[in-house]
Length: 127
Image (tube, rainbow, N blue to C red; front, side):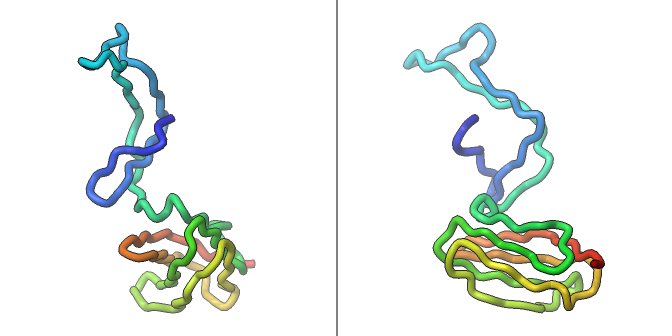
């Protein structure tokens, strides 16, 4: 698998059914390097920062866990009306957010680090 995916603006395509390999007939570039291809279906667009963040479980009952592969980030929790419910700095690799006091429904988690930011939908379910 390629280590980097092509970028479209500031978003990274997320592929399903991905295959990769050399082109048919072993076509080559002028410097005799084989052309490579990736085929699949783009099923979503993902913000690049989300490659460094794991948010689970989703759906969540009580405790939402956040794992960072970044030195620091900022987390914001919003409801679907856009209201900011929580804002906290994340320093270090593991964090948690107590969601037991929130009603069932869909929430938006924003993770920011420097100029990068990304959003994740989180479903809060009953105990």
